[in-house]
Image 1 (tube, helix red, strand yellow):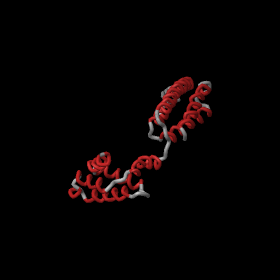
Image 2: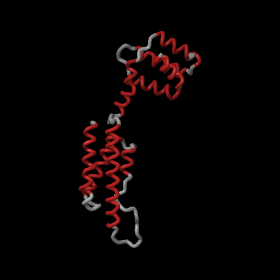
Image 3: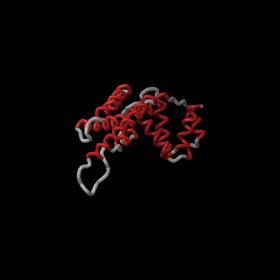
Image 4: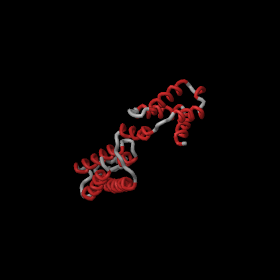
Length: 191
């Protein structure tokens, strides 16, 4: 979803609160609105995002049980109105966040490709590889680290057809298992 489209949808949902405040707490229109906003936030930001989780924590019904039984509709209506005010505030905050900061709704594979996208422009010369080997005593490295470095250098030295996913996986592995080696590679490339 594009930034402008998401902004407009969220602004429309925020404006709808004015109409919802005139309705009863148990209206079907509110239920549809609430479900719609949660689905939009989940799809735009993810189900573990602060935007989604903070909105989904808003209570629209009274959280009080009475032993006497009877009608709690007045308390529920009050909680409903209070919940709508909180929802308006949360939506305003999310809208402001989108307007101020870069928003992009990319799939996991698109994000992975972006992470490795810079790597496709790395070209290591033999002298740069030698410089890295000199900075790191390759002979003292763990055999698996040597194997991963060899795979990385082979992939990066290709003029065309670099496998960005493979390069990304190797860099991720090096970051986890041999960060000093990864830093030496980056340092050599920068110099």
